[in-house]
Length: 173
Length: 138
Image (cartoon, rainbow over all chains, first blue to last red; front, side):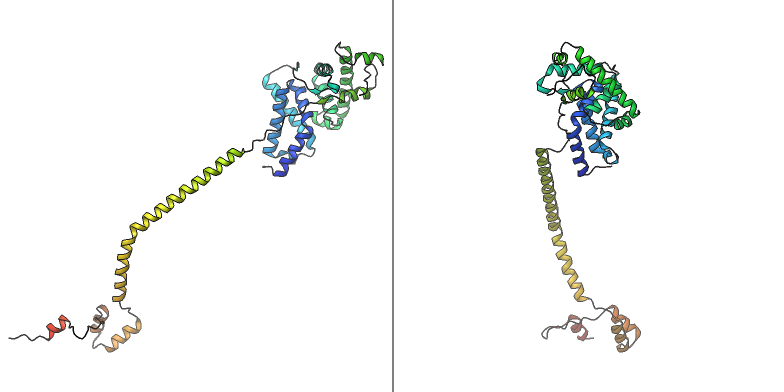
């Protein structure tokens, strides 16, 4: 099935809109920003070439699912453990607080894979728990509970670090 | 920027703090479109190919025309002569011949070997006529 011009425009629009969140999601799985970028590019080029997007009911969820599968395949190919040590930044921190960015990135990497995926999908991918549930093939309640556990661990992890930029503020408030 | 309260159990404040971290922008999608230089090169190649084919076609058509001019002229002359000499045999002319001829054989001879109809000028005589009229002295 060949895509028409409208499909390509829609795919490029999706890429611009959800590209950053997809890139973060892929990085949260592979641990490498460069590899994550390749994964996202491959998915979108394939979508343009094959024209499979028009068959998807929920295009946003479909693209996230594609990126997840491709990223997991990348990990399988590399036969790598899920211990993530990302060297490149994942976020634009508020007020250029790069220490906080590093802190958040490290805290995310300490989360179990399933919790990390859920928190990235919900917080930055803006997917509902229902969408996450169908994407990860779990129940909505499981998705929500994973999210809550992840938030608690993140809070604990980020406050426990000496590099936490907001430690003083936290303590004072 | 709201101050996050990490010690607080309220998730919404912590979520608001985390959402201020924006994921980095993705690189532009590298769609492989033919570059302008590549397109120009392709157009030039196409124009060159068309020009070469046209030149070859013109050359061949000219050479063929030069080779066939003379035979065509000769054949056309012969054809015209043949056309001038041939008498069309129709049903009407055959009936007329049969009616006028003294016998059937004579009519058939007339059809097969039509007589020379072009009359000679007055000051010229046919050699056959002269020889047929010449009296041979015993």
